[in-house]
Image 1 (tube, rainbow, N blue to C red):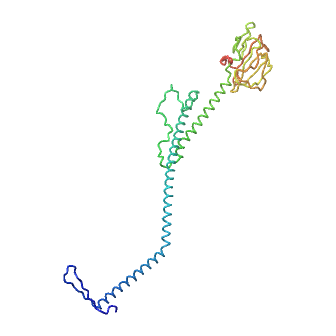
Image 2 (tube, rainbow, N blue to C red):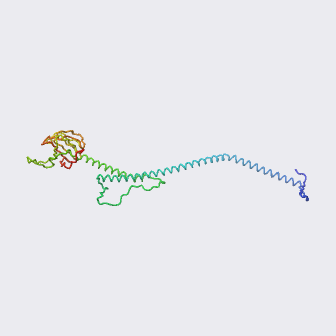
Length: 329
């Protein structure tokens, strides 16, 4: 026992009043001391236990805390990457939208160009005199609404664009126009060939002494069929090719005397008789207006003149319709 004696405590007020005493038995003091010590011991026990448990938990979860810290840092980095990717995706979407818009504009531009080519093709056909099922003379009875133009139409640039249907609207028109233009080219080439190869220039100008067809000699009264024109000019007058041709004969030929025969293709040939000079050879390619010889009076002839024949498919025809002008005059 720590407390073996009993104790009294006197409490005195400050104003001189009678004091009071409190008696504490030794057993009470010992019991109070014991309870206090026991409470302190139990509290210390729980405090120590709590500290040890907390230390144990901290030690056990320390790696987890560190991992969480790493995860937080990584998440922060992932957030930055995510923001960067979002910005990049937004830029790509804007660029894709722009490219879609440019693509649609390009296809629509191509469609408009195709319409312009169609109009040009029709204009060329009309100007060249080319007739086809879709060419109508303005003087002929015809009508109806105008044809539909090639137009791609509105497209949402925010949505995926399939180029197949868009190009399918243009490609058939391009193919059709290519075919029509090739047809026009072939037609015009043929027409140009016909123009260049058909005799259309007078080989020379002079006084016509005998025409095409049946003629009668004044003195003898003899009649005969004349296959060409006789044009009287001075001897040595140059003779021009009336069109592009190939020389198929150049030399003496009976009553023609010195003669040149040209093959112009497309069934046309021309003959030049009674020449004094031949300046081409068989196989030569001569151009329209080129000098091929000179006028003379060889063969069956009464004076200097040119005997000029035009033949089609081997049959003599009247040259009068094929006399245009002398090249360069």
